[in-house]
Structure formats: structure tokens, C-alpha cells
Length: 325
Image (cartoon, rainbow, N blue to C red; front, side, top):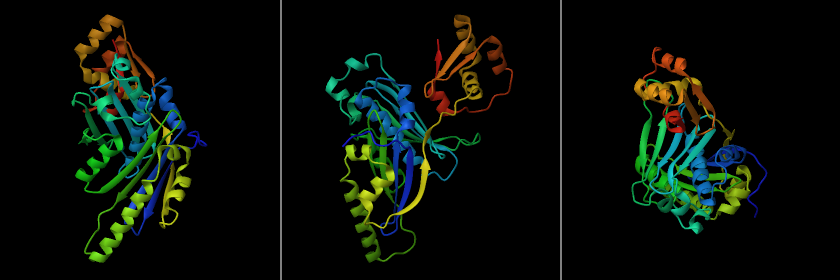
């Protein structure tokens, strides 16, 4: 089964009344190619890692009840130094990845050629890797919430499942797949019961949930990568009385701009900025997500420290921008 299905970046939301569960199914084609165009020649394992994080961020952001974003972020101690995927409530997604200089020699070639990324060798070789989930309301008076995700699990999906079960107390299952063409995912989540319910009703609900999971477990990466979301949902759940709640377009989106970069530079402090100016004559910043360049000369930099600046600047821009020394 070919992984090059008809393109279409889409996320759909489903509701299963009998199981008291919801689902999101996502497929990234063009938006994923936009990400990869900034990171050419990634090995299959690295494509898998960043693509799975991208698909997962989309499905998690689809449940947001505020106009913010979900960011998945790994600080690795293996070949991958940093991996970030972020999606906002409007289904604008972006992702980036940074590698260590010796990444090509720090792993056996066969591991880099595998489509299914293993977390331990890629990002947690010495047990010092960190995986976090950040909920950002994008409100200047509210700090982002950051939860720590365990890296003891073998996959991105398993790590997020563990986190959701512990922090949200919700039964959650994920299936993720990515290659050089597409990044896809399926999320199932059972919502908590409210009020008093008979034991028989709870048992029936659990039985339907287990059936949904069993059906989703038949899904392989090749089928997921080859099938649009609505067709995939129909194949899996055509007998489960699934209600299609919403279909949303997903697109690549990077909210970086000159003002945000200016706030990030102001946060570095005047001494650091003047040092860069003395050495380079200007401060050049490239956004790691979209590769947009921002140049600040001495006059621009002086203005940064004479104007009033916001307290607390955008975390995603801070992580996604690189000052060129």
C-alpha cells in the first residue's frame, strides 16, 4: 500500500456516544512538506520523530477550550538536541529539529533508517532527555502551563498516553505514523462519567471503549499513511455509530514577526546585544521554524532598550529562533 495518498491536510473530530469517547484523526501532507523543506535530507527515523510530534500536537490542540496552542518539546541527550512541534487552536502547525554535530556517527545506520523512531537511542541515550507538553493561552498576563512527559516509554504515542492518564485522568490511546510524504495520527479518548451511573451502564460503556481500541489496534502505519482521515475513520468504525462533529483544515503557520524577535533580543540584555553588535555589526536572527531572517542594526537595537518592552515574551519564538554569532 503506497504512502503517497491524495494530498489534503485535514483533522476530523468524532464522537462515540455508546463508549462516551471522542476521537481525532489527522493527516498532514502539504503542511508536513513545508516543515521538511526547512529540514532537507532527514533520515527516516528523524522524519518519523518530528512527524509524529507534529501530528500529535494537532490532535491535542483540537481539544483546546481557549485560543492558544499545544507545544510538544524534547530536549535530547542523543543525536537529537531539540525537537519542537506546535499547533494552535486554528490548526496552524509548525515544527523544527536540531541535531548534534556528530549525530550521524552516534547511532547505527539501521536505527536511523527505521521509520518508527525509538526514543531511547534518539533523544534519551544517557537518561538526561526531557519531554514536555506546553499549553500556552497566548495571553500576556498568563504564563504557559508546562507538564513533564516521561521518556521511559519507547514511543511518542506511549509517552503521551502515560502523561494524559496521569495528569488528565483520562483513558487515552494514540496511533502515530510519519514518513517523508505524510504525518498522520489517531487519538481516542474516553471522557469521564458525570453523576451517578448504574454499574451495568458503566460496564457497557467500557465494553464499547475496549472495542474501539481493538479496532484501532488493527491499524498499521502503511494504511494510516495511505488513507485520508474520513475514509480511515469509516474503515475502522463503520459499525460503531460514530458521529462526525467537525472537519478542519490544517496548514503550516509560523507566527514569528519582527516585534516578537525584538522582544526576545531585549530579553537577552543590553550587554549581550552590544557584544554581538561589536563583533558582527548587526544582530541576525533566523527563525528555526520558517527560516525567516530578521536583521537588527545598532539603531534598531538601541530602540529595543529605549522603548517599553513586554514582561514575558513569546516562549515559542524564544525556542524557535537562533541568534547568529
